[in-house]
Image (cartoon, rainbow, N blue to C red):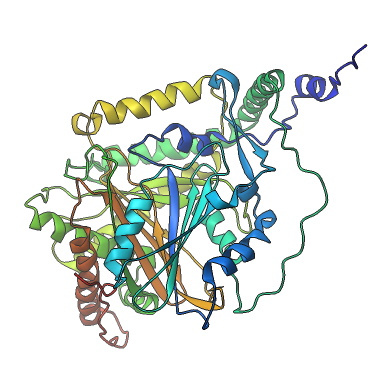
Length: 504
C-alpha cells in the first residue's frame, strides 16, 4: 500500500493564503515576457582591469574565486520553473547541477586588442540570449587587451536583478583587496531544487491573487491621498498648459529593433561633473542628461534628423529602500524633457532641471502606491504575444512615440575592486535597447569616474562612436559655459574629458 501524500503544505496554502514559493514579481517577470530574439532582456557590465601579476592564470583565478562565493548571491544558483500552460509568473528553484563551463567563458582579442575591438566583441556577446533552462547569467574573461590588462563581461538577466542589486553584488563577484580572504563555506542546510507540482503552482497563484486583493483594499487610504495629489496637479496643469509634457517627436531612434548591436564607451571625471553641478546649482544627474542631450542634438544634426521639438527620455528611478539588497527589480521610471531644441548648454541645463524637478514631484505623489507585483492569470502568454507583435509588425514605426531613449545613472562602488590581484580601472554598463527606443545610455559611477555605456540597435545607430565622441565634447562645452556663468564660485580648471582611446 502506497504512502498517503502529505497535503499539509497545500492545505495551508489554500486555507491560510500563505505564499510559500519564490515566485517572480510581475515586474521581474515582465523582462521575460518582453524578450524576443531581437530584444534580449539581460543587463551586463564590462569591467576593465590593469595588467595582472606576472604568470597569473586570470581565468582560473576568477572562476575559482566566484565558484567559492556563488552561495552568497542567491541569483547565481537558481533557475526558472514555469507554471503549466503559462498560467502565472514562473518561480525560482535551486539548481543542484550548475554547469560552470556554460557560465564561465574564456576568450581573447586578436592583436592588437584595441578598445574598439573590445567594444565590438561586447556588442556581439550582448546579442546572444541566455539559456532559460539554466541560471540566467554568464561571465566572459577577455584577455589580449593592448594595455596588457584584461576585461570581464558580466551578463545577467534583468528578470532576476536590477542596477541596485547588481551594485550590491559587485564586491562579491570581484574583491575589495588584491588578496581576498577565503569565503565562508555555504550552510549545510538543504535547498529545495524540486519543481513544484501542478496543484501547488495553481494554488499558489490563486493564493497570491487573493492576498494582493486584500492588500489593495488595505492600501486605499494611501491610494486616496495619491489620487488627491494627482488631481491637484492636473488642476494646476489645466491652468498652465505649457507645463504639460508632450509626446516625444518621432526620430530615427523610434524604430524597430534588429538583432544587431553597436556599443560604445567613454569616461568623464566625476569630480569635474560635481564641480559643474555646484557652479550651476544642479545635480550630477542633470549634468549627465545635459551632455547626453547635447551629444544627441549634434548626432541627429549630422544625420539631418534633428526634430523641431525636444527629445524625451525615460529615466529609471529606484523604489529600493535604504539598505535593501534583494536580488530583484524595484524600479519605476519618470519622463524628462531633454531640451535638444536649445543650442546653448546652460539654457539646456536649466530646462532639464525644471523638467526633472517637476517629474520628481509628480512621481513622489504616487511613489508609495506604485505596484511592483500583481498576479495576472494568463500574463505570460498575453504579454509575450504582444512583445512579439511589436517587433514583427514593426509597430514602433506606426505608433506615436512616448519616449525617444532611456538614460540611466547608477551609483557604483567608491572603493577599488580587484580580480586576480589586478585593480579595476573602469566599469561600463551595458543595458537594454527596446522596440521604439533603440538607444540606451547608462552611466555607472566608479571611484572618481563616470563610465558611460551606450548600447543601440546597429541598424539604426551604426556609428555609435560619433555619439561617444560628442559626449566628451559636450562636457567640455558645458564646463566652459559653467565657469563663465557660475555664481560666486571659483572658476574651475578646464581639463580635457576625452572619450576612451580608440584605434581605427
